[in-house]
Amino acid sequence: MTIASKSKLTLEDFLKLPETKPASEFINGEIIQKPMPQGEHSRIQAKLCEVINQVTETKKIAIAFPELRCTFGGQSIVPDVAVFRWERIPLTASGRIANRFETYPDWAIEILSPDQRQTKVLANLLHCSRCGAELGWLLDPEEESVLAVFPGQRVEVYQGSAQLPIPNGIELELTVEQIFSWLTIC
Image (cartoon, rainbow, N blue to C red; front, side):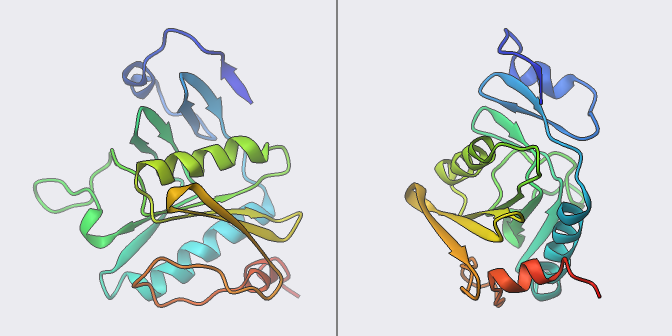
């Protein structure tokens, strides 16, 4: 849902506005509010963060953050999961994690909600790729498929038992079936 059409609002002006729930993004001069996450979306998001962090955090490889505002390349987006390599996590002078991430994630993951348009979400992942992200995923629960965005804007579709691409150095193996099996809890 768009809450403001293209206007004279700048990225700096947008960042001064109060946060919304669900989050709003600033894309191509437009403020776009993300849809409220629903059950499938929330389950997949939580499990992805948990599974990624189990293999990356203790080894200081990366951290997966849910719903983290990332401002870079003239836009401010909030990927469902933003994975940052350890050495790229913005820190304060005291060594704590910064509140503002003014850079692209190394791995951006979006989960398509029923009322979201795939094109707009894919455009966010392509923006991440153009700015330096190693990998993007667009999970479509309805289709049980994953679009992967690679450097150079290459996009591939994964379904069923296909092994999903993972950024180098992250010792994790996931298939499309595994991810969507998290939605069945009986």
